[in-house]
Amino acid sequence: MIDLIWPLAGLFVIAFASATLLWGGSEAALLAMAALADFSLMTLLIVASIGNILGSVLNYGLGRLALRYRDHKWFPVSRAATDKSVDWFNKWGQWSVLLAWAPVIGDPITVAAGALRMNFMRFLLLVSISKTVRYMAALGAFSLVA
Image (cartoon, rainbow, N blue to C red; front, side, top):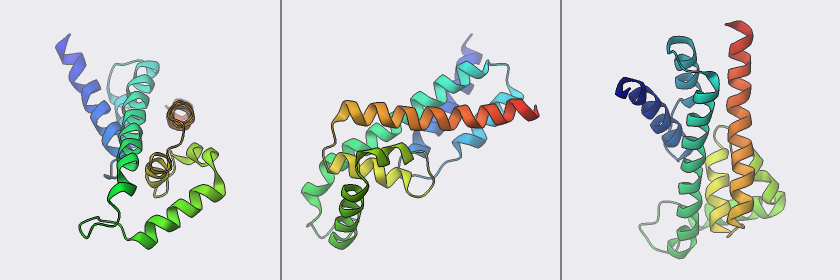
């Protein structure tokens, strides 16, 4: 039984990390497990989605703290860059969280949602849809060629 948990735990960690500002290849890990491991696609979808969603929740939490410290010298993002992302988020609105799955822009969107104090339940719903549909698409494409 424990042998079955470790691969799923690894998938969870990779999906979690790739949803934060760290780089990760969660789709590659998901598809490799779908091809090589003996898990149902539904199990893989659930584990990867939960990990990725929780990584975005971490980003949201960091965003909630971010604007409080943006004028400190040690803060890693310039005030101009923060203002630009705030303006972008305000222009496109809360629906932009549906792009949380997208490379490069997805993670900063989830941080901006927290920084701008987007309603957490709305954030959680939109990011859950975004992340889960992305993994469903990847697994669906895999099913077509496997």
